[in-house]
Image (tube, rainbow, N blue to C red; front, side):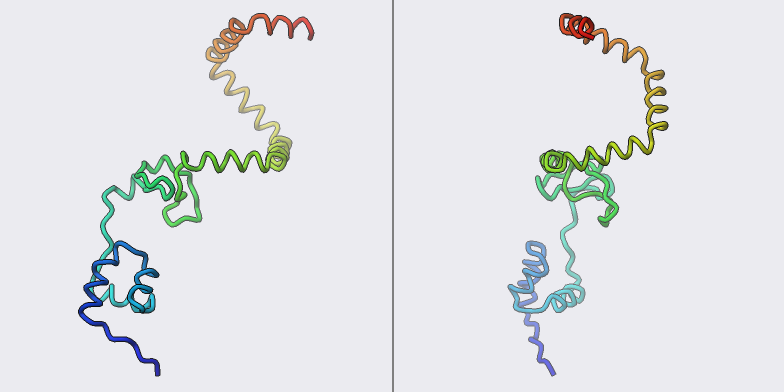
Length: 159
């Protein structure tokens, strides 16, 4: 039968002091005990992790930049317990840019396949958008024409 090390009062005091500073695995290494023993002792002593100083329902802490941000600044992820990624959108931008550069051909193939499979739906949505935003589109094309007059004239002549 395996002999377990008894908990001394000194060990309990150390556990109370370091439990919120380190992970459970690190606490187990420091106190030379198993993770299960740490969990059981924490339950018996009713030690709780520090309460978060922000609303968990509306805010979240980014694991990369360590800032507390609104939930809307995180991408959705069904695999995570709270339904959002651990890293905020702002911190993820460089990763996604690099991913797009590395996998450009695959992304283009997938987009082309999607377009061919849903051509009618895409064209229908484009027409609806154009009808809905006709004034905005006309204004944008006029502004472009005014700023790039020479270029548009030469391209129209060549066409």
